[in-house]
Image 1 (tube, one colour):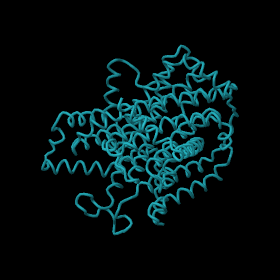
Image 2: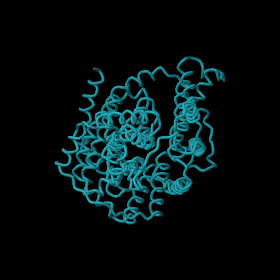
Image 3: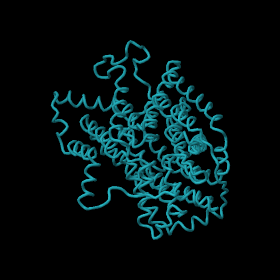
Image 4: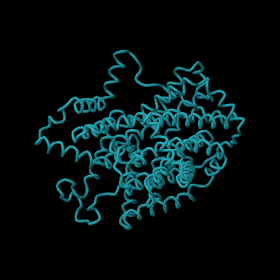
Length: 507
């Protein structure tokens, strides 16, 4: 009951005219970000983060999360109409969404995608509403050793459960740790790796790095690929929407299963991409019409969209309750909280109740707004796809440069942004994941501080990390997740089950 009372208070905080206005603006910007391949949720939030400078933190986080919801919805438009996923997690949506569009059922596919997205996102918000305060209250008992164990758990789970090459994830994490170490040592006060460059005394600014790594590098990749869009046209009217909604009860099991899968993948760092493929694979396995998957089965649209949005939303739970991001976008939002002077973690629920519950309430409102906006504006945003990216890229580049400059009013940061953009471009071409590097940059300092404070308190005795059942469990769980791949492979081999779920995309 206490949570519900706080949630109603959060609605009072979120439902001011300027918060609602920025929520609508955020959703519209997010849909543009989601529609344009080459941007994506993390990139869009990173590029537009400087817009929030000068806002109060509640309005700022509402704007950024609304951009995120809009990007989540927008990715489905290109996946269905153009067979080009606007977001990585929309790849599975193309398998059945585009065949439906080819059959003249584009409106039905889009209505199904938006509805499933909404159901998945609301499932994730409900999870945050009731579970995040419990997790935060429990985390108030944590000391430095427990916090380090949680950070270790995050890093290990990124390695163990990540779908990319493990060695490349470790290399990306290591690069983030090196970047996080630059500047003043927060415990000893010594300079580290500044090379007598005054601008590096405070280390690399998180915002400059993410704008370069995500924004600039994506522009370079997209310009190189020279995308041209020739897709199907769609118009959604309420008759199509109601027709889809009447079918929803038939696929309730699929939606519930995909949402649960997505929530699990969001809270653990599995991510929305893995959740969407897993949701699609499970729907195909349990469907009575599995042979029609890849040929325009509406279930093949509902499953990945609900799983991806549940994962994308649930990824904010560990960020709010523990200060640990569950996705790349959550890592960018975490950096935003720090820029606004807020410390994510359990104390946030005690010291900043208006902010936390205003944010949670805005998640409900933002998704309702997002659903209504995308249903009403599909033709408009689909038309954006027909504008040559060469015309859009300079505008995005200028926004990136302004964002980097406003961090410290320094031209050095613009050059730094360009360098990080080239580094990000090279890493993407070599298939190195960027999210682990951002995660290590955001959490590297805090993990190091917790580790050193725990050792200072124990006079250098490493047994402090096995001092009580809680920290021991977290450390053991960390190593279990680190070895998750070999363990699951061995279990499957013992029981004679295939190692992977086969997903058959349409040709």
